Image (cartoon, protein in one colour):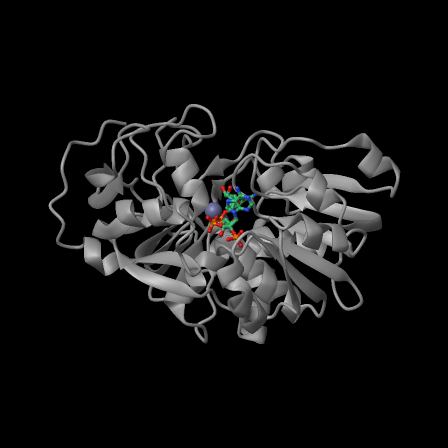
Length: 357
Ligand code: NAP
Ligand code: ZN
């Protein structure tokens, strides 16, 4: 089995460090990519640090992958050697349940397989993500990357982009809707770019005064400082749709109150929000929902939409060796607006440790 260089977390508290992993031999339906760029999602930090319940170690995070096809199995029809391609959060699902049949593999009734922190169907081996030099994925879970876009800025579309695009499409957001995005981070800045391209009137709700100018440049029409109770009170019953990317536990009520009659608050970040006030829902027939990334077909549609509208992420390119500092900066809310790892930096790394799958 081919052994390659990667960066891994060995447990919830150690920094990520060089590590060697094995990638499976190509199956007839597999595509092998040389990884060029890998985005750094806040979910990587949550999982590397076991913040979402027990994680599987060793863990090679990374689910915003752009690369070039270096080999294909004998039954692959959708990709050829030399093609640009992407891999997001999912690498497998049952492909036959009701949800998979609808193109909703992220809600597979039999359990999808994620790019890392998961186990391969059949073998039970750990999956390893994009902080590595190559990956092997069945072709149904490989995306076509439009060559017209800046490749390093495309990587974040594979998670941040689709996680914003899917709820905007599901709730049919467009012209005539008043939309608020909560949090200007990796997801939030993609939410603003995408919702702006879809024609909605956009407000950023942010804790960071210093991000107001950026928000307007990215496509927002208004900015509200969410930590200012007066400003939040003034924004009551303003929005049709509020899409929240806040990554940590927080009180939902101030955001709920900003919804108009029949408005929808969609959470993609915090898994432990608090304080949904029944009165706030009942008085204005408001709803609270969650949303998980997007299906494969929808992810391809999102990439094609981004190519059509010239939408990519605002990124800071880093080397693999900078990853622990990058995590610390993300937690301190100090990134504009997505770190992307230049995977060429991992080539000569002296990888340590035998694979222990
Ligand atoms: P990020 O880049 O760190 O951005 C999060 C933003 O939230 C920050 O920039 C900040 O924006 C705001 N924020 C941070 N702490 C806050 C607090 N205590 N109260 C209010 N706002 C706060 O993170 P990300 O990569 O965009 O990910 C956001 C969340 O979505 C993470 O929890 C991630 O795991 C999750 N996620 C979910 C899915 C899904 O499918 N559901 C997919 C990917 C990621 P301001 O400075 O503007 O306030
Ligand atoms: Zn992600």
